[in-house]
Length: 281
Ligand code: SF4
Ligand code: SF4
Image 1 (cartoon, helix red, strand yellow):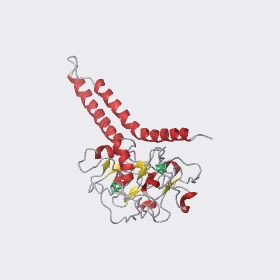
Image 2 (cartoon, helix red, strand yellow):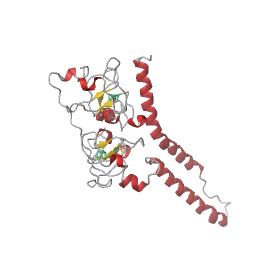
Image 3 (tube, rainbow, N blue to C red):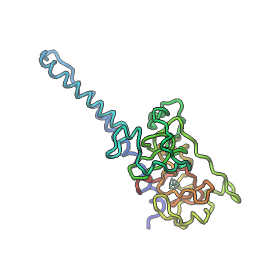
Image 4 (cartoon, rainbow, N blue to C red):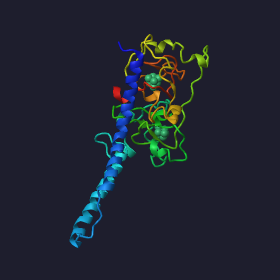
């Protein structure tokens, strides 16, 4: 049986790989663009007028096509069979139509804002927006609906179209901090035995919680997702809310638990063994 340290390491690598995959295309595009800068030759003195007339327009068309491809690659890859129009405006798949967000709010498909209404953007772009605050992204927003069909994207109870955990918009809403349960102090929450309903429950990714085989919160550096992303410990797009190991609230106290980590865990938390729910769908 593997020890906990090796499992922490494996999971961290898995998380890193997932994040790297999302950004590999952008890195490749950057290198390709750089190559393009050095590869294009200007017209020399020896070029004929005929050559200019035939080669220049061709090169411009090729460059325009390259630019369009670069712009497409820098944005999120669309789910298979989904047009850009559908991605931006919906409709989203039926499973999301009236789904519930990680903050417990129900989606009404007839009362949604457009992405342009709310300056919707990917996280990198949000960093340039003066309304954005560090660490805030859809994955730690009250309105976010996690991936339910395995295409990596979720949805939102406030905004139309497909939504990734690493996106952001101006109506981002903080998840409420759960109250400390009666009979416990705040300092006891990380190591406290969770209520009966969670002890051997299955996580939202289908993993059963084994009370004698859990990491401590200290081992996995459990903290709030907004803080972890703001500090650069976590990449944008990760929270317990969209983690395969999370066990959502079972007893209406606003807390949850985890199939891998002991103690009370809240939907807005995050730790180093985070695993995307998509990987279990
Ligand atoms: S940040 Fe905006 S788009 Fe993202 S989940 Fe929240 S309300 Fe929806
Ligand atoms: S649910 Fe939260 S605490 Fe549990 S493994 Fe996922 S990120 Fe870590």
